[in-house]
Amino acid sequence: MAAKLKSIAFIICVNDETYFEECLFYINRLHLPDGYVAEVYPVRQARSIFQAYNMAMQHSHAQYKVYMHQDVFLIDKDIILRFLELFERRPKAGIAGVLGTNRLPNDHNFYRSWNLGNVLACSEEKAIHNYLSEEAAPAAALDGMFLMTAKDFPWRSDVLSGWDFYDISQSLEFGRNQRELWVLAGENPWCIHDCGFLNLVGYDEAQEAFSRIYRTDLPYCANRPPVYPEKYRQQYALMMELKEQWKSLLFMEKEQEVRAVMSKVWDGRFIDTELVILRNILEILQKEERVCTSTEAGFLYDCGSFEQAQHKYLKTKFYIRRKKYAEDNLGICPNVSAAAMRVIRKHTMIQRKGKS
Image (cartoon, rainbow, N blue to C red; front, side):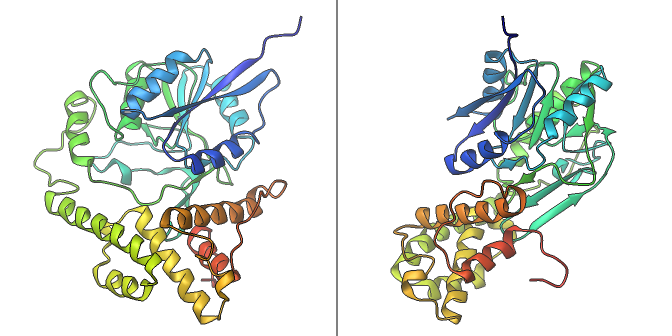
């Protein structure tokens, strides 16, 4: 009788099928130990990440579970092998990640505290190489882009909800249960986090709820101003209204007007990923005009809406990435001009010094 295969569970909250499809592409390329298979649990329409992860965790019988974002692409095909080796060497290790910190911050800006790991990230303005360490190191907290566990502990959906602080919470829960946290790193990045712009609109409320649960674990942050005050939220809401108008005007041949207004009101505190992609598409149109690209070869020629244009942008970005990290299976590149390829590559790939 053939031995029963063991599984490694990949648990992923999904709200964008284009990203999830690309995430799966890289999961399916991973090297796994003999006797193991990948078991993917997509969770759609989740009320919160705490609830989603608990539900999938309880459903899976796998000892080893990976909790990761749909916009994380595992370019190192040996990542699971290396993490399993860590758990074998360190029996007390309960959870490990690719980005983290060896000390908890004295303020509540956890997203600025990472000092361990080696990963790539993309904000759609530019690609970033977070080359923070080369050696595996014990950690105090881990970033939630990719977390692998060797033991199950409940995600605190009993007291927390939403989409923030789940990774810090779970880091502290493993610590409370006398389990070690580790960040693995090496000479090359493990993955690409296509994270876009960090949304801080609900950060302060989530931080307040988190602090009530973990007051004894963290330095008390008293009398500190909010990370994202009410006036910022109002301005952000206004920018989101403008964004919807600009998306419509783009397909009314009003790109010059959109570009002019956008340049006057643009403020990095009040933008989201979709807005940056919109600005990049406007840059593509401008470059195509300068080199006299034909109408049939233009980026928007076969697009009837911003959603279609964004999908084309993403698929082109993914194709460019595969040329570097997955040449054996490039997939199909959308029909785009050389000018469009240059703009997308500039904003989403690490640029060599001297290149723009």
